[in-house]
Image (cartoon, rainbow, N blue to C red; front, side, top):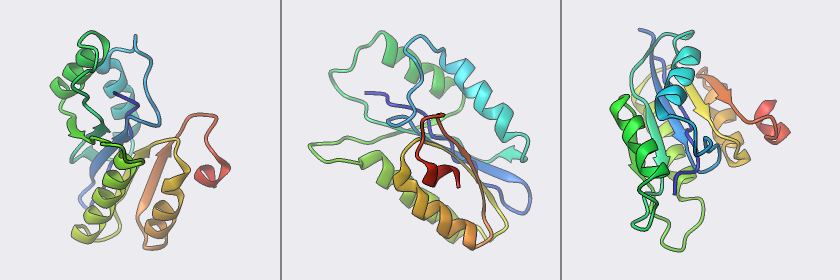
Length: 153
């Protein structure tokens, strides 16, 4: 199941970015072409520099429809997006946890100032984002209009 793209763009002092996408909490419509989604995200990202890595977090179910979700995955991958499979196996918040670990790992490996672009509507990211901001990382957050106020503050 593809839920959405959360782009986390990470910027080093040299201007690199790393996008991470939470496909489970900000899903594009089934008719959205992956090429258009990636292009829209990159237009935002390039305002902050070059993209170092672009990741999308999603559950690639064995029963997923080969039509829409398979097409979207194929288009994302051919645009250079690294797809991270997050099998739930009866657990919750798998993609969120994997994305947060990757964000923090990037922060450990990359000294501030650096930029991360996060696309998610999940307020579980609020604390991790706040901690990284306190450590002088620039967090560019792209959320749906319905996102909780804790993500927009």
